[in-house]
Image (cartoon, rainbow, N blue to C red; front, side, top):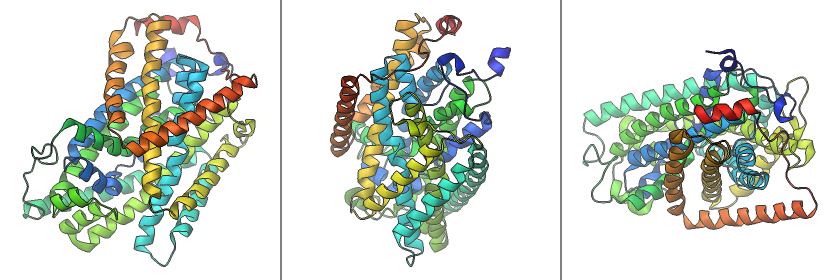
Length: 474
């Protein structure tokens, strides 16, 4: 290992000042990604994916993992080229052009800004189902206040708490899997074949599977949040890409195994496919078949705490870093770029995310389609931004830097773009419509900025010569 590989690349050469504390290692980044994705994420949306996939939930998650691995590979390449906060916004802006970066950041805002609201709402509804005397809105307010306080005390505090939460989630998952497998061995569940969760000849079609992937991908969103911590990574920029791939592989295997077991425990799969899961209790019903009321309540409580505290905690941290990066480049109001000197966190961005999450969550709590609407917007925003990410790899490495390393810089991004494009094409129509409306608003905002002579500008946009040369050969 060279000295260059052993240290994190400075951002000063891009015209920025290092303000955030470099305290996270590879293990911290992997844990962060695992917590953001939530190892038990399928608990909450199992019924929707089951219906959308015709019962082939494990297949939907396997394809989803493949799609996200291609995306992680593109993230890894761009994180090495531009090791700084901002995620797709930074990579597209520097890899293609600043206006494209602005629009990419605008689209990923649908994911980053709205996902905390979605998580808080789902968790609050789940907690209300367990403790009905406490209203949904009060649970939501409590989750927001608690997470904001933790994030305000700095990224190390967030990292320590997320490690504890991850262990707790894995324990609950292990309990479910052990009890579930024993129950299946005892003949519980439905009479379908053991491989129907991965292939069901009665319902299979690729359009059906990819339509379900557009729902299941919600469980994977969060691995990309690792890239927003690039300026707090104390190791080489390669750690960002490696941690994304590692987190995806680990959580993908867990998703496939748990949904496979749960699918076989569904008592009436045909009814679930026909009628859906309006109450969002399909997984807990399957847990009840395996282990009774105890297991059903345990999995419901774990979902509420994981989504409302652990996942929302890291989601709020990632969103504040994205806002901080865009504000630092004068593409959002400057007050969002303020960093608390003592704790070295983007304090105003953190507080704004908390306020938006609370306000939007309370509004959506009164809508019958609140969770569905938020889910659609989050997924579409993320997937369209990922499409631009794949393009940015090709433009930056092949077109600009003259790379001839074809697999990571051309073939893999092209595969990722095509597969993800097919997922977007098969996504819910309402999600497509709402997503394009948001994109249209972003175009209008960009035009206004250009008319006011505030063209988006990124400091030190050109990498230095040695890096460009390295890009060609690695």
